[in-house]
Image (cartoon, rainbow, N blue to C red; front, side, top):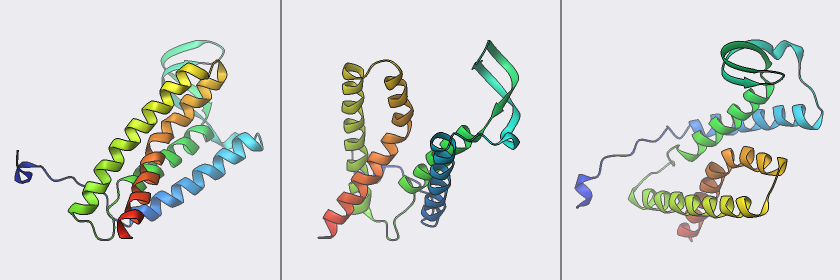
Length: 155
């Protein structure tokens, strides 16, 4: 198959990197506020639709009252990482696309290896914490590997 048959890959505009960075900073600030200082502002207690909820009782497809600080923090960090990972470089060409694809595959391999190790060596609530971190780790690994490989390629 020749390269002419490849479909184009669409990336976000380069300017969304800055939006992504802003969202990550906001998400981390909210996370610190919630977990380090133990705060849950009352004004974030709102009714939300839940497909599944398990607090004092299990509920399916219902409205529940929930403090959404954790969800806002997690979404901010995830969307920020997503914007950074999939925004164009200032000058995007085939070389950068090749670096991007290789970095993506290595991030998948590395994340899978780390997950396998977690299944073997982490137990109980620690594994649940790992799973939460693992939601973000793939994008973070990809960004780190991609930026590292870009720097290496420039030298």
